Picture 1: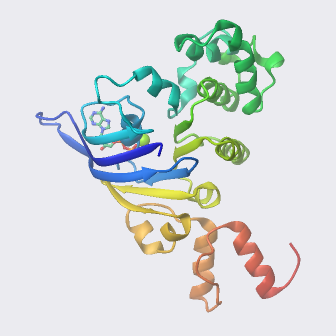
Picture 2: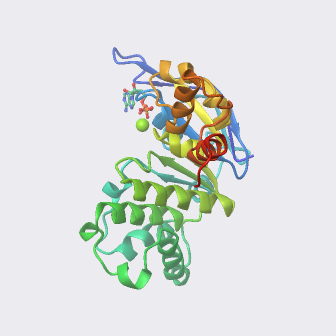
Length: 284
Ligand code: ADP
Ligand code: MG
């Protein structure tokens, strides 16, 4: 089991007037190969949670196990954690720093002791994964690229480590619809190739479409944990904690309120389209 979180609590600035309980008694497990979304209002503790799982924030209460290892344990191999868990931060493009794309993506593998002769092939594979041509981009300055390309290079810099768990904090924020779909499709492809995905996003439609399971945080507590169908079965519950509801599911509710017998469980565009065609006729 790749991730197990037990009774996790975290307080920022404890013992000061600014003390803030960001996480309280959070419990969940994630199985190998799952695609899990994390949602919650701003300030609900999402980033804190994934930073703890990634080993970047310490001093928490409770236990976090990655593939059975508790990395708070002094004897645990921290390099193993770095190799297992890849993290794409919010706006990762701000972390690009090398003078060429190739050097930037090579930085992590060099640090982790990947044999130098293996690195170019890995960089090429990582760029290919994000849909960028190695020969075209390897010698370009990352700073000269478009916003979307910069983000892809930053993500390639994580994928090049071949993490078995990939954590992404709002990876599609600020991208246009095509860029969002592109990144969600990439995440699905990685997931289908065996990578466990943990993704924070505000985009409920993307989660309805791509996630196996959704964790909902509210004020530092795990509020809901279930499949998209379960999570999006109760509109009031989701709206009441300041979250959006998938558009297809909202549309289905609206039709229901106007007397159309839309079955429960329609949360995706494709399902809504299929239902409408069946119910009212016409062609796709
Ligand atoms: P989210 O990612 O869901 O928006 P965060 O995990 O970033 O939430 O933050 C949870 C809460 O902890 C917020 O209220 C935030 O103000 C507080 N917080 C986050 N980082 C710090 C910090 N470095 N110092 C003090 N408080 C923080
Ligand atoms: Mg955040």
